[in-house]
Amino acid sequence: MPTAPPELAPVATRGRPTPQARIEELEYELSLSRELRRRLEEERRRLDAHLAAAEADRAHLLSVLAQREAYVAAIHRSVVWRAAQALRRLVGRTW
Image (cartoon, rainbow, N blue to C red; front, side, top):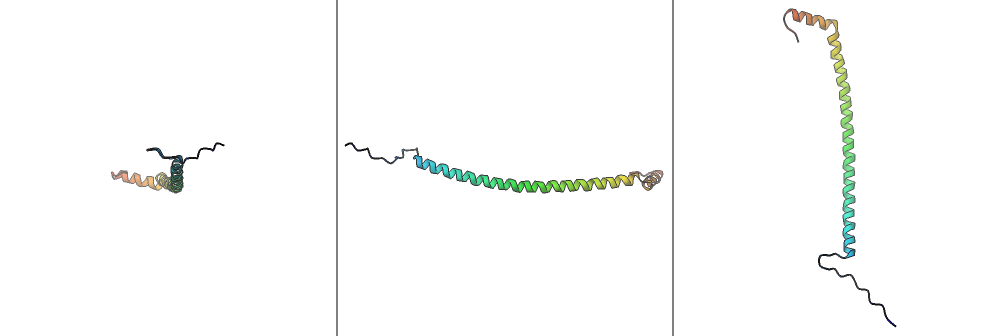
């Protein structure tokens, strides 16, 4: 009765890793990729929060600027301001 040939372990040839070594290498690269992705997602969330805070500050500053511009415009439209400017022009000074 013929017997089956013995199973041989894969022999690493020069420059070519065994299939198991290649799988382990790919699993390691996958774990590194997953860690890098996790870090990048954390960084993106941190930067999103920072951007939201900066946009809130910008909106607040634009609101304050609009209030101040309205205040200055109201002063320039006032009768007292116009009278003061008319008196200044009489003595030769304007701004």
